[in-house]
Image (cartoon, rainbow, N blue to C red):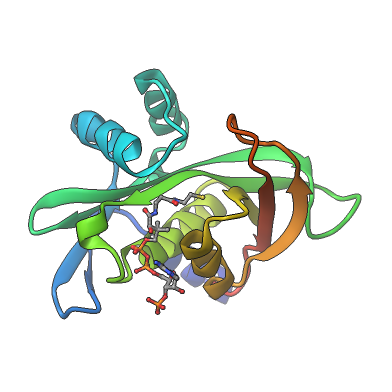
Length: 184
Ligand SMILES: CC(C)(COP(=O)(O)OP(=O)(O)OC[C@H]1O[C@@H](n2cnc3c(N)ncnc32)[C@H](O)[C@@H]1OP(=O)(O)O)[C@@H](O)C(=O)NCCC(=O)NCCS
């Protein structure tokens, strides 16, 4: 087995991953299961103005199951991160067609915030997009006023690569932020 094969195996994370949060409590990361659907839909409605019908979540689960991550704290699902992988022009290497991971939605309930849950879901989701689905970079849209999320992405080495005026239904602009999927 050569070195790249070894790395491939170790980074293909599946199942339950136990992580110590900033308050010393353990939280769990795992793949979404269909029985999580109602909880994830309700978290999405509680924490974000961008709400999707149930089938949208189910389609992402069916298409990219390893990259749909939930977090559990004290046995309850408190956060989710839903992703997909697309083919298109790179935001990083101009003019290069590439497989791009796309962070569709991420949210953590207010009572479970600032423990490192979103940060660790992002790492796991990015690894899944790279190692299971072949993405070479990852991008996302974020409201220009969403400082917590922008800080989270900056901490993960995302850079602002574009601005889309009036992207959201209320007219707010979006930054596109992106990073290569190396060093994961
Ligand atoms: C953004 C969000 C997902 C962060 O979740 P979280 O689990 O609290 O984030 P983490 O604990 O992993 O924080 C990681 C880093 O993000 C940044 N961050 C998170 N919350 C922040 C806040 N309220 N203010 C400033 N920076 C913040 C910090 O850099 C933080 O690192 P630090 O705690 O070492 O300073 C959460 O606030 C949320 O669900 N917000 C509503 C939904 C949303 O905006 N989703 C993103 C849409 S693009």
